[in-house]
Length: 203
Image (cartoon, rainbow, N blue to C red; front, side):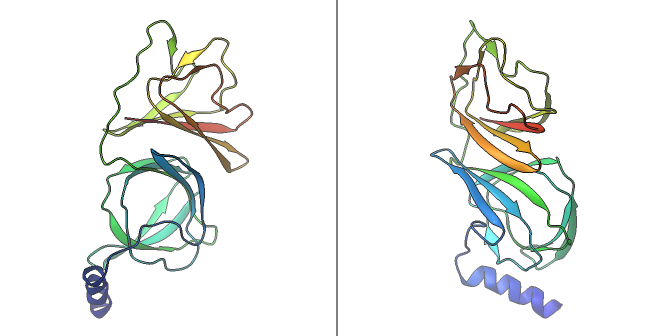
């Protein structure tokens, strides 16, 4: 075990590390100049050592286990629960192995900019998002995450988005992604008929 940990550390020092995605079990759902959105599954296999190049956030949409191997070679079995959200700063370096019969699944949103760059777009004449019953489940210096269960349909009147937002709607455990630009005034966030939805407002 001590030799394996040493080999892991030497590997980190010997070569540039790849980004975490793409990899087996992962599909790109969306990309533009601000974000990359991935549908991630942790299959029962060992994944290469990698470094997260971007700040990232997301939500798990199934229960599952994985083994995380730290930069020091320490192995930690971790369980995640469906509908938990998260936010991490760039620079996380580790390897992973799927460790459950039914793989853990999640939607990950990577922020291409290293720091918060946008000022919120104010519009005093319109109702601000969110205008439907929802719950703020997390806020950090980079993102505000809203949860809607069930997902809302079209609004009776337009609402205004002060920030760029990634909308992830889940129907029968399948994610669908929509990007909403800062300053958008509309009645529909493309979540009609979904079981639940998460909106990631980007700071």
